Image (tube, rainbow, N blue to C red; front, side, top):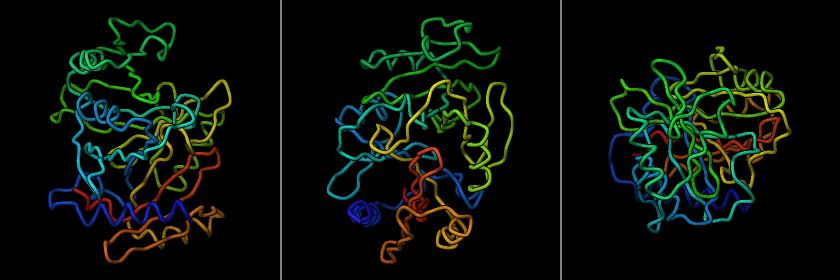
Length: 284
């Protein structure tokens, strides 16, 4: 109940204070379920703003009593002022992926701003790494950065991309990665496909990637990415469907009609804490 009170207060402050502008969840028009947000437990919110906004290219926005949010096309980063119990590595939500048109420039900025590149430890031992960038093929290169509180972020180069940065994927790790993919396909309607090294479920605006972990992983609650979020059209009906499927609601469906927001929470079978929202697609 305490968690719900905090979320309800957050919801009202977002919608009361947000100015009118075009919505950030661009993909919301393309399907009933899209990715919505990452919620970060932050020991130093200013350091996170420097990483997500000044370094990676997100835009800082305000809600409530001047609390901060960072906006990217198709995803919001929300912060809880709380020291996490650990980073994202070792959890089911191993890292977040963004695509950029000029990877070299972003990697250089990550290092210039004092953040660590970890590409050499995160790619396969046989993969060549040149100055923190790993060429995958003739058209694709990747790199990995470690943000505040050890949030792992993958950066992919897409030279044809017309925006400076956008959400690309969230990468789950688990010892049952194929079963994880099937669960997200069944529950959220992701479209299954096979990448060279892992199964994928696609939703509008994001790829859900699932890699096999050689060692056990833990759930997300309390870690640097405490929970992930999906934006759902007709959330109340969706939560009833979840219950019919035997999925427990950790926080039952709640509606705040005055601000047009609805919220519920579930946990996937491997411990990823998931917020379900309806109304974040209106947030500018």
